[in-house]
Image (tube, rainbow, N blue to C red):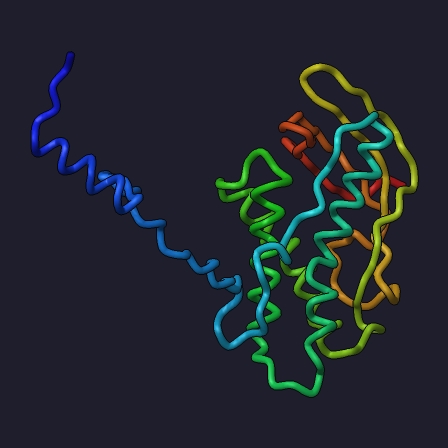
Length: 219
């Protein structure tokens, strides 16, 4: 029969009398307060959370569906942040740089999620040009002058040649950008018939742009 030492017997008796374990569980961790939301804009600007700056992605689909998705993504980029800026009352004192900062955050979101390459100089110049168009729309919304810009859309004019392989989707089509009022604003020629050449490659559940060229359509 196994013997119990006097010290062990005393400890066992104390444990039984107190109803407590000799080896109590560690105290629960302190409550962790939820992280304070951080704005993507400078402190002097209205709050804009990271969830408010989300690009319109290109889902997988047929070549014809992909054309519509590409134009939808570009419409989303040119109008990105319009609802946010519209909520900034024209009577409030909002620094002018806030619109430019929001357009810059939009450009980062689209460049990082809609394209395979976004580091070399040529791509950066392209993203900067589209950022200017987005900023132009945001400034028009901010000034409550929709006749000078506002929420335009892209319109497909014709699908010329499209195909899809395991390596990617290749699109060739004509489209035009329709601003709120034709003939106002600088739209890089996109408000006239433009020929689009686009190569899309798979990236998870979506497609991303590996190559894109937009030139004036012949004739």
